[in-house]
Image (tube, rainbow, N blue to C red; front, side, top):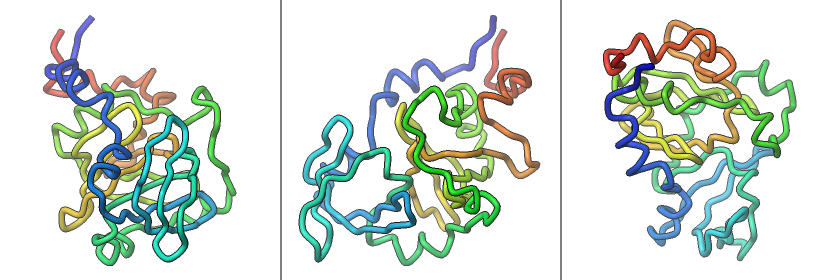
Length: 192
């Protein structure tokens, strides 16, 4: 049974991190892309277990269920980030809601993400409502995946909002596909 060099150390250091803690600590406005194609600019006031207490710009406080959050980035990046987020109309037309049960989500194994990140491969994430995020994975935790878009613009995708992940060649990296194809074993990081 082989392993990926550096994966365990990476997970020990990063797996419990949350972008919501980072947003809370920053005391800055963040732009949140929510289910239902709602976009809000808000400051995180409190990171609760399943919800975020936020102060929405111009609207006051609101409690957002975390399951509703698809993607976020610092609000000062919105003019750069928004034009880079494309929509896959076929996925959008499926009208998918947030997937409450973790067992029914479109899961990506850490051992698939780690080589993609280390090898700086360009990847395409498709979210449940059709958003396409093209970029290079720069980090991941149990809850989220950070991707650098064109120009190094950093956005964070919530793992529960992912519908698909592919590389430039169209290779799928969802757990359902990788359980059989095991692409991580083809990485130079893989040691027997």
